Image (cartoon, rainbow, N blue to C red; front, side, top):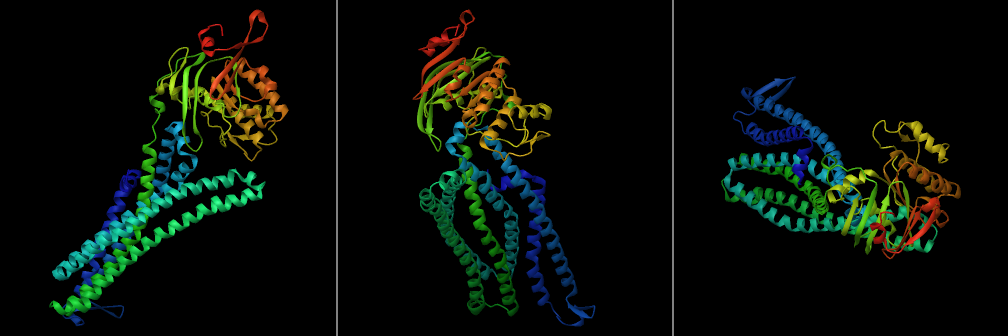
Length: 575
């Protein structure tokens, strides 16, 4: 995408009207100086034949004067309409561009989002969008200035071709030499943009790591001096250099136009037969064109920054694959079991992962059963949970239900069957299910069960507050999962920050209730006191399944048996 495309896509009719009005203003601007020159050079200036008395004021060349003020009125109206129309378009562009980017983000696989990192995505959706819009909204003003210059240079050609050639040669020289500092300025802006990504990550560290930094003065001082202040200083230093180059180039362009005026007034007039009136007209034109030229030069840094951000956005989204849209997803057949067969997954190096291979994994998850995934930190539990929840696709092996193979096209559709609460979950401020899918009364019932009725209320599906403790927020997330009522539910360390009362509610009330409702329940847990709630327990170690324990019901007596080879368990229909 490019700036003009983005600007016209948001509201093509308004953008067209704004550009036409801006062009009209430029044409009228171009006629002002010739009109004044003709009036001043008119025959009989000051005589009664060319004056008109209005409110006791004598007006020279009344016809030209009327046309002059008419042009001024047209300029005012056309510029007002152009700027207001394009201001509305820029506001719409900001909203549409950000929404479209958010849709692209949500269509991208989770692995790619994790590889990019939240800091870079945040900068793209905020800083880059604003810079693109700022660059796009100066384009119509740029058009007005260009149209004015074309008209004025046409008048200059009419007045004196040699002077016109001199001016054009000077401008051509200026454009060529102007590109040199602007090239380096753009490179500096690109460097500043990359530094800004690093600074954004540092700011996240201040916000999310506040408790750790507050508990250690040495760490806090080192973080500020070695990370935050260093990156902030690097950004400020790079921006100063970039702006210094651009401002220097802009000032250089302004001085070129003044140099031309001086050469015409003090040098060229001695070599060409120029009438005094022509010299005055030429100098007036050159003085007047300095305004549009200055406006063009002033907008170039914004356009350079917008191009830098636009290139960054294009590079970012070019590396993202898009999952199928909901309307094009194939249907999921009814299922009872979910099976992972020889599944492997390799993490790419990113902000979240340093490279790690998980697998091969062979497990079966059944509806109406509770599956625990246990193991030490870094053993691959969360990766397995993301494979089960279809947020990760296998590098090799297959995932299927008892009714169909879950291909890449089907995984996005099957994900709609799943509710997840990961350790890094995000809690929205409202229920986002279909209209009428859950009443406030149902939500209030869950809140009472989870001990939150005195902390938060639900009105029209919106929570009254989310300023709660971590444990209370996690209980809100559990309530949302219960209301979603999906066939497969995945909990990642949900009970880690709950007190014993609510741990007991979770393991001995909520999980059995979900099991009784025919849900397939997957729980990542370290709470060995509650392992008796599991029908199946998968132990992970160094990215592989160490063993699988399953509950059998032989002769009606629950017992645990160890399955040494998970492949054998999958092939055994009694498991």
